[in-house]
Length: 88
Image 1 (cartoon, rainbow, N blue to C red):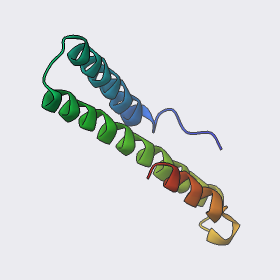
Image 2: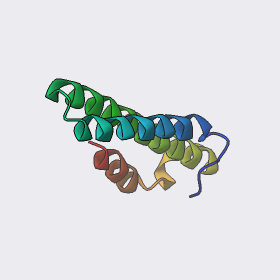
Image 3: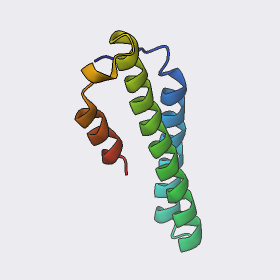
Image 4: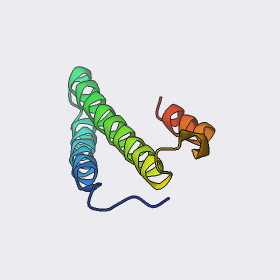
């Protein structure tokens, strides 16, 4: 299933923000900054990526429901579970 690029715009923006934060983490490490600062920024990057991943999976699930006329029996539940668990 392909994702709708229009509905992915907020996710793309979130990932771009995370990319900038990750560059900041690298800069902090290269400058030898305080461990607390590095970990705080790294946690922010991780949370942003997690949220982007969940948004992608949720969008995919919504598309599956629409394409299957809301018939949950025809959804590949195991596949969706695997996607969610891959983010855990």
